Length: 109
Image (tube, rainbow, N blue to C red; front, side, top):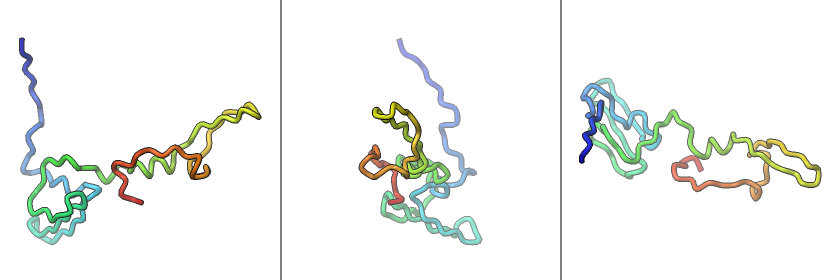
């Protein structure tokens, strides 16, 4: 028994802009015409000379990085001596008390 899967919107359209224009890892310089553009990818460490429609390293620059999310996070702490539970801003904790996640997408350090 086989199942058929249909993907809608799976083919990139010519009219859509390159993914690089909204990627966190891209440096872009745009000229007055559509073809006047220079794009350098920090992940590939190379210049991209074509319009990118799919990329496994793409990260939208409008989404906060993991480092930014950790910086604004509130941490739930318990104090057994005072029998208190409460939230503390992560930036108010000593560095040794912070739980640090592996920074896969962190380019801000």
